[in-house]
Amino acid sequence: MNDRTAVLVPGIGSYVPGSLARYRHVPVVVRTLSAVDRAALTWGEQIPAPSELLLDAEAPAAHDLAGAHQAAHQLAVYAQGVAYCALLCNAYRRLVHTVVGHSIGEVSALAATGVISRFDGAILLIAGERARAAHGVGPGGLLTLRLPAWRVRDLIVEAGTADIEVACVNSPTQTVVSGPARAVDDFAVRARRASVTVHRLATTTLFHHARLSPVAGDVRRIAAEVRFHEPVRPVYSPTLDRAYDGAAEYREAVVNHLVRPVPFTAAITRLQRAGTGEFLEAGPRPGLGHLVRATAPTASVHTPLAQDPNAPPETRPEAERPRCQPSEPGRRRVPSQSYRRAADTGRFS
Image 1 (spheres, rainbow, N blue to C red):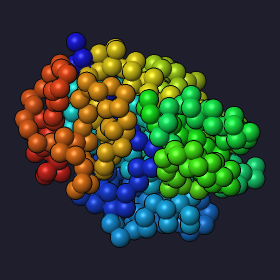
Image 2: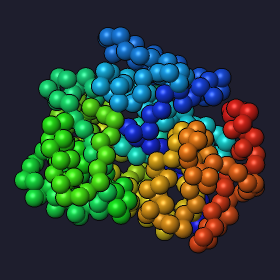
Image 3: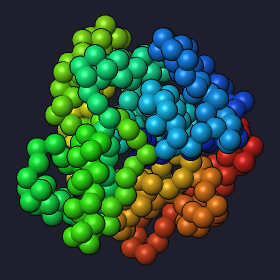
């Protein structure tokens, strides 16, 4: 019986300017933005405060922000993920069985569930940016291809390059590659010539790549000084294909987005087989939910806090569901009326 609920925390492509404006007075959002703003002050040079980016709809868009302030972009993504995850977990506290982070969303998931403080999570991301600069890591990119992973690996072999690596296996038909900026541009041209649909994500930072091994080493050393706690609810690792267990694994989790690929498809398949039938995306627009549907068509997927007016109707709360019900083919569950009232009034704890 699939009666468990998982919260999905998206990664670098999820940033939306002003996404938290509606919840600016909710205590958990206030605490999150305050902590991440304090961490941003340690960067050493003036960058936009995460609170300014997430409370002002006129703040720079993702591509502009990533090009001008890589650290600010990462911190905004992180803070947004922490806040949205906490909002959903508070509203659905009796229903949420596990939290799943995608890429940098793993760090947000750890902070939202109390494994690390919101401040420490932000400091570790800043440490990663400092280490990139110290080790001379240049601009990078992430490219989404509408192809299964095995075909993308074939393209990489055909390209004869060691600079491009598979970063995320998002669904049976979507794969993300990572590499230095010029190599990603060249690979995009090659893929288009092969009639492959590609999309360049809004980031100029290298993620999920072997070149970041020394960067990961620096962050691990800093993470060794950070206090890790048991989460208020399990945090599922796509990399381990199970819940994290213990401080050593949490310390490794904070560097996964640097050097490890994200086998998201396998994680969703395993979660569904283990009884997870409902997935709630902790973000302002559908993203991971589309990938879950492509991987597990019978799963019930929602983005309860979606702010995208073009989002499909099933991603917005519309009907009453007093509690989770078993998923059935062709039948989608929707968030409860009590949650709708919480979302509409901002009454989150």
